[in-house]
Length: 548
Image (cartoon, rainbow, N blue to C red):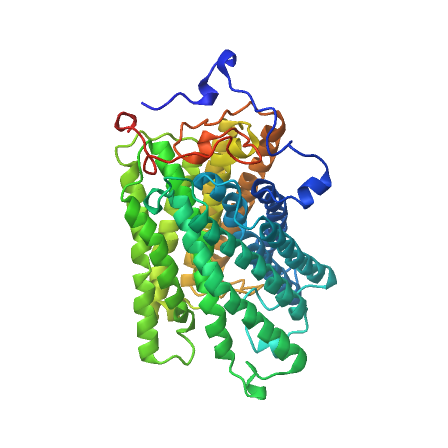
C-alpha cells in the first residue's frame, strides 16, 4: 500500500502552489539571462536543448523521407551528406550530451543533496552561454550551406577534401565542449563539498552517483576531443601535418583520438539516464533499489572501462591482431556493469508494488531498448561479426538503441517524473501514457528494421540503394513510417506539458509519494531550495516494508 497521491485528492484537500518560488521571485528578461539560480539555468537549457532537438529531428525526417524510395529522388547526394551531418552534429553535441546533465542534473543535483545551489553559480551560467555560442556556430553553418563530413569529422576527408564549412562546425563543437567541462567540474565540487548534514556517500541517490561518474568522463575525456577538433582546424587552415598522409600525418591517429573521447561520450549520454531510471523504478515500485551499492559502483565501473574500449571502432584498420583481441575483450567487459544495472532494476521490480504511471512506462521502455542496444553491442565487440556489419545500418540501429533510445526515453521519463517539481503543476496522465506508448512503438518500428538492413549489407551514409533490392525498400519504408509515428509521440509532450505548466492543477510537494530530499521542499522550490537546511538520517530509498 502506498501513500495517497496528489492527483487522487479531492478539491477540498488539494495542495496549492507556494506564493513565492524560484519562477516568480524576480521578473524581467535580465533576471533570467543573468541568473545564478541553478533551477533557472536548467530551464534555460530546457528551452535551448529542446529547440536543437526539434532542428535535429527535422533533419532526421528528411533522411528517412529520402530513404523511403531507392533512387534518391528527394535530395542530391551532396545535400543528403549535409543533412545527415547536420542531424548527427545537432543531436549528439547539442541534445544527447547535454540533455539530462544540463537540464535535470542542473535542476536536481543541489536539491537531491540538500544544497542551496551548485558550487560555482557563475560558471554554471557561463556554461550555458558557451553552449549557446557553440550552437550559434552550428546555426551559422546551416545558413552558410552546411557541412558534409558526418558528425565524426573523419580525416583526411575533413582536412583535405571537403569543401563545406568544417572549420566553423568544429569550432562550434569545441566551444560547446567547454560547457560540458564546466558542468562536470561544478557537479564534482558540489557533490564533494555541499552535501547536507548526514548525506554520506552511501546515502547518495543513484541519480547523484550517475552524474558523479558522468562528470569524471566529462572532465577527463572532453579535453581530448576538443584538442582533436582543434588539430583538424589547424591542419585544414595551416596545413600542419597531423592526419593527412600527404603532409606526413596519419588518419588513423585521428580515429584513436576521436574515439578515445567519443566512446566514453556514449556513457555521458546514457549514465545520467541510468540514474533517472533508478529513481523512477524505486519510486514506482515502492522499494529501495536492489543492490544499491553495486548499482552505484557499476556507474563508476562503466566510466572507467568506457575509456578502454575505443579500439573496437577500428577493427578494420591496420590494428594488430593482439590489439584487436584486447579491445574485443575489454568491450565485452563493459557489458558486466551495464548488465548489473539492468538485473538490479528488474530485481527491484520483482514483487514490488508497481505503478504503471507515465514515468514508469518510459523507464520500462528504457530497460527494453537499452537491453537490445547492449546485446547488439556484443555483436560489434566480436571481431568477425563487427567486420561483417562494419559501416552498415546495423551499426546505425545499435547506436540509436543505446544513445537515442536510452537517453531519450530516460530524459522523457525524468522530465515527466520531475515536471511537477519543476513547474508545480500536474499534467494529463492519460495523454502522457498515450505518448509513452507511441514513442516506444515508433522507435522500435524505426530502428529495428535497420538491424536487418545492416545485416543484409545496406551501407550507412548512402542516399540511394539498388531498386532491385526489394527487401531493402520494404524495410526502409517500415523505418520511415516508424519515424513518422515517433515524431507524433514526441510532439505530444510538447503540447500537454506546456499546457500543464500554465493551466495544470497544483502538484503539491510530493505528488508521487516518492522518497528523496527534492520531494521535501515545495513545488516549485523556493530560490534557496529549502527553508531550513535538511538533515539526513535515513538511507536512500527508505520505503517502508509495508509499501512493497
